[in-house]
Length: 159
Image 1 (cartoon, rainbow, N blue to C red):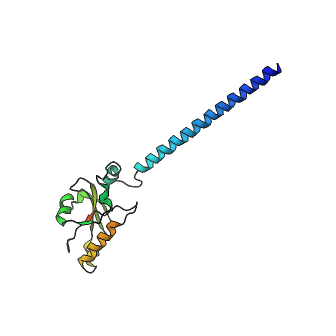
Image 2 (cartoon, rainbow, N blue to C red):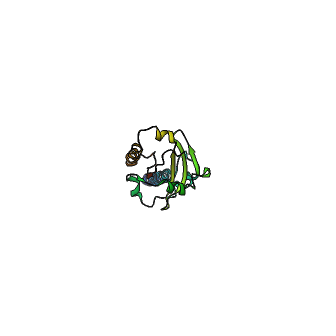
Image 3 (cartoon, helix red, strand yellow):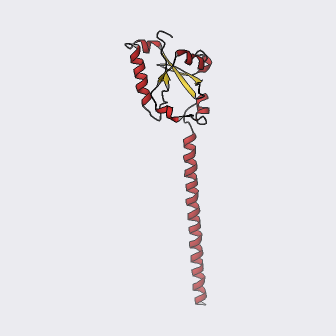
């Protein structure tokens, strides 16, 4: 009976070992799935934003991402007036010390924010070329917390 008892103990040990391995493997698979799911969610959530840009920024993809790392181009002020409906108040999505931000869609279909800087900030600096050169330089920088500068317009004295 001793051999029967010993073989029963061995079977029990192997069964417990097999169940433990299966539980451990299931735990590892579950953790990997949770990590993968959390990583996917974190790339699609826009923390702390609200309004029209937040609802569409995670779903609207830039059609040509190469434009995000190019020097800003000059655009006629009339182009910005057209895409913002003449800087209509219904398009305002924010306002601050430097200016007012409007939501718009570019002529090529990209959702953009147009910042209209208060005139006294621009006019207080010597020469219009200072503003243009500053915009071109800033457009070459990139940071995950700052939207890229795609272009700029100048209209001295307009408020």
